[in-house]
Amino acid sequence: MQYQVWKDLSDSDKKAVLTRPAQGGSAKVHAIVAAMIERIKKDGDLALREYSRTLDHFTGENLELTPDEIKAACKEVDKDLKKAINQAYRNIKKFHSAQKPCQVKLETFPGIICQTRTHAIESVGLYVPGGSAPLVSTALMLAVPAKIAGCAEIILCSPPPINPAIIYAAVKAGVQRIFNLGGAQAIAAMAFGSDSVPKVQKIFGPGNQFVTMAKRLVSEDPMGAAIDMPAGPSEVLVIADDKADPHFVAADLLSQAEHGPDSQVILLSDSKELIEKAIKCAQEELHSLPRREIAQKSLSNSTAILCSSLEECAAISNRYAPEHLIVQIAKPQRLLPILKNAGSIFLGAFTPESLGDYASGTNHTLPTYGYAKTCSALGTDDYRRRYTVQSANRKGLRGIGQTVMALATAESLDAHRQAVAVRLNALNTKK
Image (cartoon, rainbow, N blue to C red; front, side, top):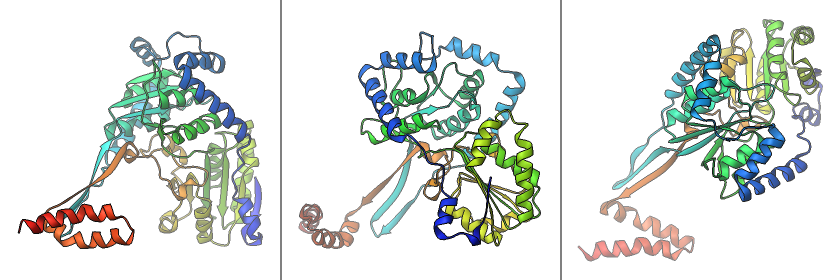
């Protein structure tokens, strides 16, 4: 990791230190994914099967798992892993079940009633990456709030062969149909539909740069689908003081660094000694990791920064807006009121980011790449749509009509004015 002293940096240096790793090859990825999407829109299942064979080496006949295949996969899952999945499921369900939609109904003016209402998005598609790190927990994180929100149709795509634990978690959480589809082709299939895959209204889930690009492109197409949030490589920022255990800090940095070579970790502290010890521990512990080469590349994109105070650490964190923020200081609650921009915050020495990733109950689908300044952690509201309702009686229209007509006239929208005027005239005629 690089080491920097914040007060010694110029404004441009500070900006550079907090810059995420560049996402290279975006123009090339855009071209590849755009061509795939157009082919799938045109040829449907034929294109999907071809991409599955060439990209995922899928040799099966059916894109969708049969009930027998799902049942057999669930039987393969080790009982101890099932127990862990079940416990995580209960915690996630408990936390998300408490997220009730806010309903407002009030009289804004005598005779004028305004209210908000919500309904579940009817059909949603969930994407769970496979590969070297099959994200079993992601199936729970995406499906549980969808089920709680009341989505009528919940489907899931994952690269074949789908890990049996992903299948078990998906079924446990309420997924109705599962498809052997990975990558950009899975996103296109869910966005536009095919003979085998139903079109959905909104797509959720993480993925590589091809998946991310596909989500962006289908969300920009009026005939495509909405998406959960912008995505980038995973990241963590740790704030630690001189009372923090350097082994704990190092473990937290490495747990995020092993996600991918483009992941980034940031350490902020007002203690030079803590920074030095944490970096040393991270280097020592790195060698014992099976994914050490990935973590090593990630650490090369990462920085430890010496700050003048914990308040300055908080200000830098707000500027960076991390996906995960870990606060390992003697009294972590003291910083919470001034910590604003983070996907999820982990307070105290015994709250590793891993808890939120798997089983504490919060959702691990979080805004990355600085989007935590404007986007929120995934919750049940993301699976619902909110709309407003208003009603006016005769008294209400009489009382507010002149206000509306004056504003419509100011905007030169005479038909708007007339829609009110014709009603007022009718009411006055009936007197």
